[in-house]
Amino acid sequence: MDTTQPAPPPVAVDARPTGAVRRAVRELTLVAALFLAYKAGRVLVAGRSGTARANGERIWWLERLLHLPDEAAVQAPLLVHELPVRLANCYYAYVHFPATVLCLVWLYLRHPVHYRWMRRALAVLTAAALALHVLVPLAPPRMTALTGLVDTGSRYGPAVYGPPDTDTLSNQYAAMPSLHVGWAVAVAVALVTVTSGRWRWLWLAHPVLTLLVVVGTGNHYWLDGIVAVTLLGVILAGLPRPGASRRRPAGPESAARLRPHVVPAPRRPGSAGRRRSPRTPSAADGRLRPPRRG
Image (cartoon, rainbow, N blue to C red; front, side, top):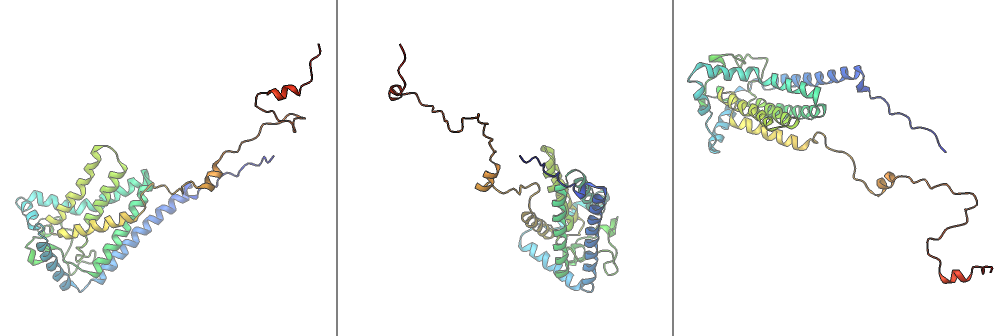
């Protein structure tokens, strides 16, 4: 009888401290690559401000044809008092990126599978957005005179952007799609997925408030948010869902492999050729027996 024992499974490299360091370096490399791509996009759209402003006017007219609400209807209530417009500017400047980073860190520590799912979605969404920013430069409503919107950041503060012609840190002609809205929806979807209870739906308030803020501050059109949500929906539909089972259905071969092995009971010596019959003795069997002695 074979008494050899199966070898224990090898220890995963990720379980060691060096594995955690490598994962952290890989994530930082991905963020650095996206940042460099964003900087490259800023260089590629340099000198196309006229095209970006013309595209902004076309988007504004397209929204009127689609009977979308005017962006000025969202900005007007903010301009009544200085406090709400400052709060909107602060939300635009200080909530977007930190909220995304905090969500990613929490998922990385508590839900690694959902973290990888969200990281891939954000990476693909950002790459697609950068491609559109380069191919279709678009000036935001605050830089398009036809909209009549006010640049709330430069007028009331805090200001995120400098003069558009001298700003080397950001691409201000990258209104469509809105990464503010796209990232906010991705964060809400991830948090709703990993949390439970009725209160988890309150996470959806983050993208709704973000959409109102980016429109009210004059940084994005309605269509910028619609395009971002559409892109994210297509990306999430194409990515495998977190925790999806990859096991193959049990076929005939796999079922045969899973069938338990039955060990026959040991036989007694000398009983190899005998087999007991379960049937009841008949009359013919009685005639074959020797007669009893008187």
